[in-house]
Image (cartoon, rainbow, N blue to C red; front, side, top):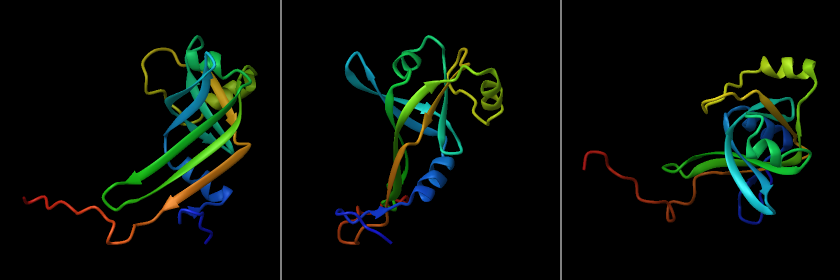
Amino acid sequence: MQLDSSGLVVLSREECLHLLASTAIGRIVFTDRALPAVQPVNFCLDGESIVIRTAIGSKLAAATRQAVVAFEADEFDPELRTGWSVTTVGHARAVRDPAELARLAALPLQPWAAGSRDHYIVVDAEQISGRRITEGPASTAAPRRDPER
């Protein structure tokens, strides 16, 4: 088990992909008018690619055309003080090929937001890294609340 300088467990690429496949919500980081922007999205992992559905005229659709973006997903248990975070960096592309669109439409990716969401963005995970935190030392753990009080 490899640890980083903060004592967090460094995850392998395979572990990162497995964790990404286990959750449905992440955050995409892109540039909007020369400033960084972060937007939560639901997504689906397709091999090593992140697939997002959005509206054709959305800010996200416009900002991610052939752009380098970051994507992050995580899961934490505040009571146990455990969790993981996975970050990917890659080029985002709009899907235009009818055969690829049909294949992506068959993925288990249903938009949460209302309205038409038939524009697909694919982010290939060119760089991927992840960390896991296990329960901290007892002396630094937050006191547990007694639900009876």
